[in-house]
Image 1 (cartoon, one colour):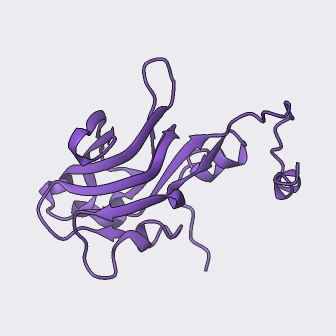
Image 2 (image 1 turned 30 degrees about the horizontal axis):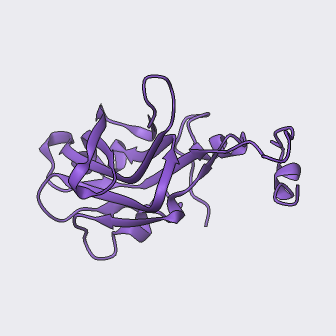
Length: 185
């Protein structure tokens, strides 16, 4: 089943991957949620389908915890939200926190969203545009539109920069034909 693309051109994070400069690393993490309705959990949040979503089931803040087994370099966080479909379930205020564990999380971004529809790209970089190195990312939904209680998030993607080869510099392969064979290089 193909999913309709609701994002404006250039906003789809898969286009970031096609450039060869970043790769998605969400599958390397352990994901947990503060709460969820049955059948609306982590699996729906990570299934690459914009029609499914995580739905919280509790009091705010609603949390998405992403923990890596080792310290990981992260460059961009992408969240898909759709106000037209979700209305009062759509987040309006989000906090992004990073740290080594639950006890030392530091807020690095706070977002105010006004009726979002599509991918929201959150840079996880410092003032010098250097990517963040962390064991854990926490996304906290602090408020929803129309004072909604529970929240919907349709997809979350995490990207790391692609390192240059230590063997030698190779040109970036950006066409589909080249990308099929990039692991052979």
